[in-house]
Amino acid sequence: DTGVSQDPRHKITKRGQNVTFRCDPISEHNRLYWYRQTLGQGPEFLTYFQNEAQLEKSRLLSDRFSAERPKGSFSTLEIQRTEQGDSAMYLCASSLVSSGDADTQYFGPGTRLTVL
Amino acid sequence: AQSVAQPEDQVNVAEGNPLTVKCTYSVSGNPYLFWYVQYPNRGLQFLLKYITGDNLVKGSYGFEAEFNKSQTSFHLKKPSALVSDSALYFCAVRDGRGYQKVTFGTGTKLQVIP
Image (cartoon, rainbow over all chains, first blue to last red; front, top):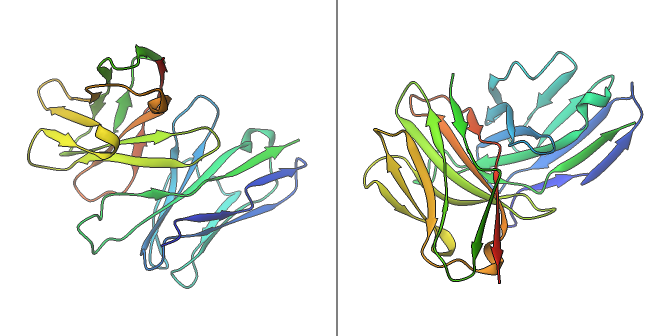
């Protein structure tokens, strides 16, 4: 069990560019979540997947944001036409729905995005 | 809509003294409550959770939390603080009716003074 991993850890981009982040959940975890955390705030829920199905999406997830989990394992979060307001830490978490620990989400280290 | 309030931005406590970090919540269904800790440049680490059962929940690193339904609170406690407990603590709530969205508070910075 190597934990949740995220790549890259840091991303600096210019306004208007597209960026993509990857999350690898804990092996065999079937739920995967994306959050955004800005300075001085708690994580804000963006979306979650059960296997490959995206089941909940926050209103924070504008049409510039898209998330996928095509094979039910890793997930990608893409932000198109980035804006300075997108600068934040993007956190990924996973959980195993069939276990007695189903409600516990395990978080990755995050990807810090800076939009110049 | 569900929400979490952590009324203290920072809590200072002397090493060896008991600590309390406060949390109140609002949710429509039965509350699923969580505490996470965040160290600098690291992800959130799970401490403990309340789903059902005993109102006093014990978690990692000697932490515990007490669920109080009438006061809609879930305060985090530890009998004797360590300097290494200094970190950012987040309380979170989820609606127990099946929705997976977890709402976090704004966090409380715990500073344990040697």
